[in-house]
Amino acid sequence: MTDAVAAVLPSRRRIRGWIAFDWASQPFYTLCLTFVFGPYFTATVAQSLLADGLPEVAADARAQQVWSWALTGIGLAIALTAPLLGAMADRSGSRMRWIATFGAFYALGTAGLWAMTPDASAVTVTLLAFAVAMIGAEYTTIFTNAMLPSLAPRAEIGRISGTGYALGYAGGVLALLTFLLLFADDGDGTTILGGAPALGLDGATREGTRAVGPFTALWFVVFMIPFFVWVREPARAPQPVSLRLAWADVVALLRAVPGRRSLMAWLGGSMLYRDALASLYSFGGVYAVLVLDWETTQIGVFGILGAVTAAVASWIGGRLDGRHGPKPVIVGAVLILTGVVVVLAMTSRDAVLGVPLAPGSPAPDVLFYAVGAVIGGAGGVLQAASRTMMVRHADPDRATEAFGLYALSGKATAFLAPLLIGLATWATGSARLGILPVALLFLSGLALLRWVDPDGDR
Image (cartoon, rainbow, N blue to C red; front, side, top):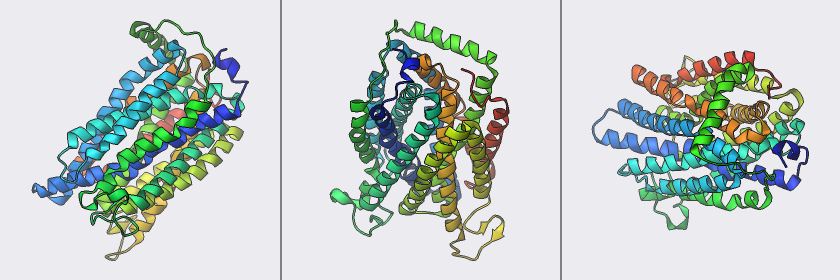
């Protein structure tokens, strides 16, 4: 049975199992990339540079550059291999083996984040572990997304995609809240409840915060069980699998793209705005640490607020997607996020939107919490609707290859936003102004959507 035939035979249990992946995998992005490990890593590197005699502003900027270069390299590695592995997965006739393999990468890599001690002596090892974890997270997402066209008829895809993201963000909220209450420690070694981290972890050596890696790995392993129990792929005849044949498939797909105006505009536009969104996620917590001097627990509350709004907005966005299609939903979300970047660039501890503040004013903190809610809501909607739009451009029987191409377009310029942020930060000497190029990426992506057919072109 082909994926196209299976698309008219939806299974409620299969859909629930597929959605469970979003719940299981989201904590990597919520805890490790954005709100706990990323800020902890940059703060630790900055403190090490400060101890070596670098001025505070320069140390903050250098730490942000290290994080941005790391994300750049990982993104390029994923971009260059995603379509090829996608084509191999399609040829193999089974995506589940690929999901299991890269799921192991996810678990082992995240567990390795424990190595980031407060003296910054294991930066290289930690970044290697983070690279393994991110590769695992991104590839398992590619393979599970490729199952979406076969889950239900086309009219239901937007709702399912939105529900998946909503449940994923709900899982991220629960994981983040649990971690904040029991483990995450601030500089004084205590959690948000004022006590020592759970399980006898030593707050003095930041073991509570470092436990974010093993915690995320365990969460993924446990909550992937429903996925592997309930999700069954439609039977597909395997084809010969080799790098040469997979490469030929990729070349044929790439050659066809210029003749498909809607697909080409879609890949180009989404490439730019997804890069911008990923940078907002990656640097939001970093911005809070370097510009507003927030502690880990404050960033965690910020993350919970953003994830809650993302869950609610993704669910609503999925319904809007089902009713009006993904394109208008995408346009609205991109416009909102562009405004957010401008607000961030005009906010500091001393002024908000150009208006000077009295010393100790809580206005920047309040505004940043509001910004976090907007980023979470609009970002969740944008990701869910984008997944639906890719389905409208994909051949159901070669969906993994198509989503590999989607990943390539998303990662082909994954270096661009971190690079522009790094260059802008270096040129201005300001972590706050360094985020401005992200607004340009959002607007550039929006301009290309003009040529995207709302119904796709598959």
